[in-house]
Length: 189
Image: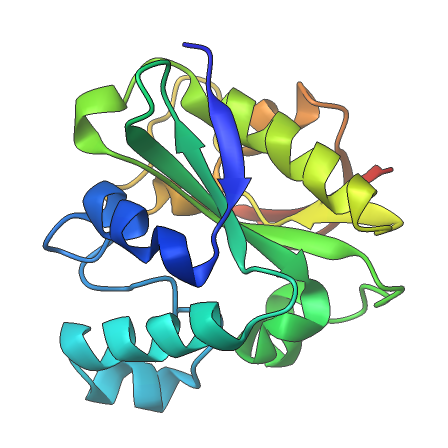
């Protein structure tokens, strides 16, 4: 599928809601998993997370990610990305412990509308994220994908970060392996 991407600005909020659907992407996450302290994230429902992310979108510079549109102009997918410093929970996470923060951006989350899954849109999103981060002057783009053994499938609900093999196909290299099932990867821009 050929897609066009656009940074998520307040005027495109309705398109994000279309992609995320009533469940707010992954179980009412509303892309707040890496932005809220865990206790706060767990303590509030989807409406509060939706409002919190709407506030991020309204105030963020740069915008917190890219929406993808199909050839008809319908919104079909999302990638969250931005400066690593814009993700406070991730900054405190052991996942990135020991990984130098040199101003690199990070792609934290991917979501494809259920009607468009299975068509390889993550590849389009990764390429768009690379181009967007480079245009913003980022020195590199990081990712925090899952590591799978050959032939294994991702546990349900854990595909939002992508997989190591997908990122490797786009020139990302492993920086660290904080856990056997997680890699931190980097692509110089």
